[in-house]
Amino acid sequence: MRCEVIRVPASAPHDMKGVRALVEAGRLKPDEVIAVLGKTEGNGCVNDFTRGYAVSAFRAYMEEAVGKSAAHISYVMSGGTEGVLTPHFTIMSRSLEATETSSPDEKSLAIGVAHTRDFEPEEIGRMTQLQLVSEAVLEAMREAGIERAADVHFVQVKCPLLTTDVIHEAERQGKDVVTEDTYKSMGYSRGASALGVALALGEVDGASLTDEDICQSWDKFSSVASTSAGSELACCEVIVFGNASGANGPFFIEHEVMQDAIDGDALRRIIDKHPDAELVQVLAKAEADPSGFVRERRHTMLNDSDINHTRHARAVVGGVLAYVCGDPMIYVSGGAEHQGPAGGGPVAAIFKRANNDQ
Image (cartoon, rainbow, N blue to C red; front, side):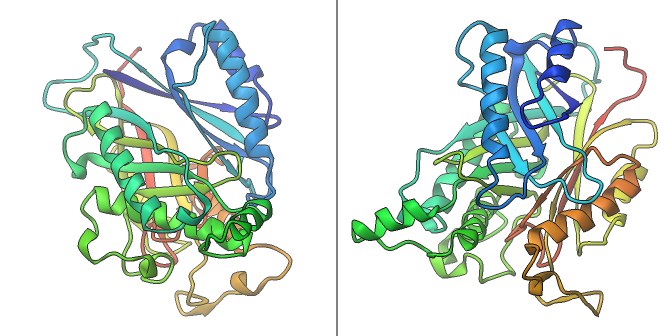
């Protein structure tokens, strides 16, 4: 297996010009694409339709380019490019072509995808979602050939949320939903998905988990989970990034955990370990510290009635990490419930080994 990662900037959520140019230049084979991560320039909240717009445009183009249905491709669009963050797409491809680009004693990037079934409204943000995400993570690991949890460095989950119409219909049927606040439903869905990742990778004790832990027990978290909620899907799409001995090629991934929103040293430590490798992409989560403080200094992100705290957090973390790596075209997603310690979050870096012409 050989996995590759390519970034392409976007002038709008539906902009396929850069993707088309890659295909025409022979740098991207449409039939090998397995997943797309996007940063779109919406508000990242419940009514951010740039996510669905981007998915629709990408799906239409890929089906045209492949010449048949491309239903196997996972699309994860994260809204919100506040501050200096650049709207873009990160395209992941996978082939079975044998290569000699890595030595037998080093592992290379492996990517696996899976998805859950569609959720009922009353299941979102609760143990059912958590358990099904856990199963999907394990399925994606098997598909990628990743044998150890320690070799998983980032797990991206796109999860559903509750809209007003869905909530009203559930109430009409006598079903109880986790919250009647659509914005809060994003947090519950992200939190349940993140704990599902933690369960799959052995980061939490599944026997002790209950519905009450979701978005309450902040000491329970995953160090590699990144979850993003949207109204454009009813299931959870899961993309697992790791390294595997059965993978080939020059790409590899590592991660660290940011302890707070300004912990740029976490990314710097990863980069400093690989001075001869090319940094291809940075993937990270951003969160406003629920305590209301960052390094004993008060912040107002949680009290701002004009701008949601997730938007503040994306701008801060995006700026910090862009400074460290020298590039604002990075993937930073807001809302890190159970994704890293409270107020912090995972950060991963994908590299390409030097002295490789492919």
